[in-house]
Length: 404
Image 1 (cartoon, rainbow, N blue to C red):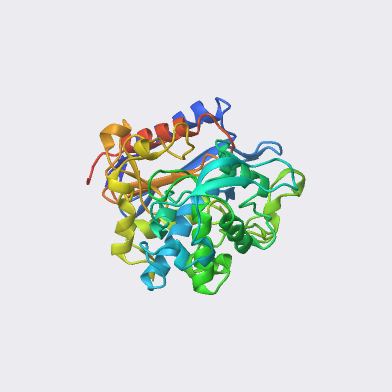
Image 2: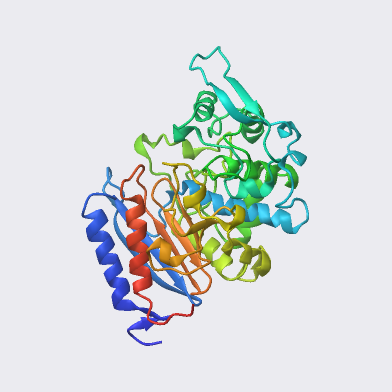
């Protein structure tokens, strides 16, 4: 330790990280504001911020700002599922239909279209899958499910027509699973990778097996034990220290949603999400509270794609992802680095990560004893993957002592 370094990281280079990100992305007009936290070797090494949390009202970025984290909900849902795996209530090799009997005869799309007329059902021809869908297929997005927003196939169109997974779906997760029981799979489970509602289905499984609503499970089993006081599926006016800031104060996040989306429904703060990441970095425990076993946490650093393939080999052309593809596999609800050279970025084999639709991101690098959380709030940014590339480069360039 010295005045120029903390936890093997250069303080001057961390200051440069803030400057470059602010100049390139905030001053450059691509992001309204941003915030970065870096934790290494038991210390919160760095918190940096720039710009605004609310451009319209001229409110500057602040450390307790609340963000829609969208798909950064997925790793939290994955941890919830693995808690039940540890309790013997479910296994990654279980056939999904043993827990959702209505899914036993799901077929794979062969032909047909989803009509846009409200009173006409979709007409599909299907073929049997080569094997039943397993829980591990949900975990890795190889289940054959999809998202309506992908705009690629007739099955996507059927999801859009039925609004499958919409946060305001009457009946919530139960209705979502009934809808999915009547739709074909995009492909036979395990054969391809496709971003999908699979993690939302995992939230349904947590709800069913635990006997609690999904949101209540997360609150009582994860958020409260970890001190994540500002993380939930909605942000009421008096949640913790925070108040909702949204156009015309009419945000849908001000009240509980009908469907508690394990794939993208949570709001959180950078401090709360860092506590979640620290728990994982510390082998499943934080401040004397154990959530998972270290052996279970170690599974998040492994690639579960069929035959150890990369996303590049299994994702369809033009597929949406919260990461690049080369050198990346998929673990338990997260991307995982399997070939640093192929990513063309600094990093470590076994680090796992993901991001959210509003350009948020995180990664956990167990070998470097490092975790990083990045928050901003802009949808559809063309700079989403580029800013994550730059952030990763600047963070790893700040390391002066490597442990990997």
